[in-house]
Image (cartoon, rainbow, N blue to C red; front, top):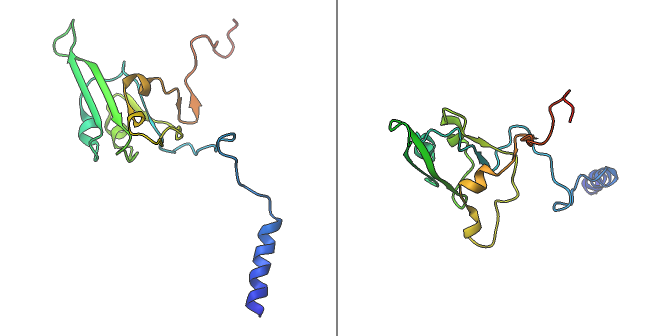
Length: 149
């Protein structure tokens, strides 16, 4: 009998506390600073070294390049795709990138769908992902601090 009353006591204690449930589509949870979400790609920083493709344990990254028109020793990125059906968000691709061309973001709400095609992200989608870390990329029309319009 005492154990039953003790259990009810625990239940009543939690019953009086403030609820922490959020209503997901309307309210978004603030993710920690080191959260690993969807990747963001900066094509202008990529040197087409294929280290991210080699480091990927699930082989979901495809990267192709073509010779630079001015300097044949350099390459220019042609395609960069990630198939999020198999991506385990392990952060290996961002760790090995020598130019920080790929970074992990705090974005997490595009990783589920009823079909497979939307989970295949190309270079345009990955470079247009403006939310990364706990901050966003500053728009070109926004003035710097201290500057006037």
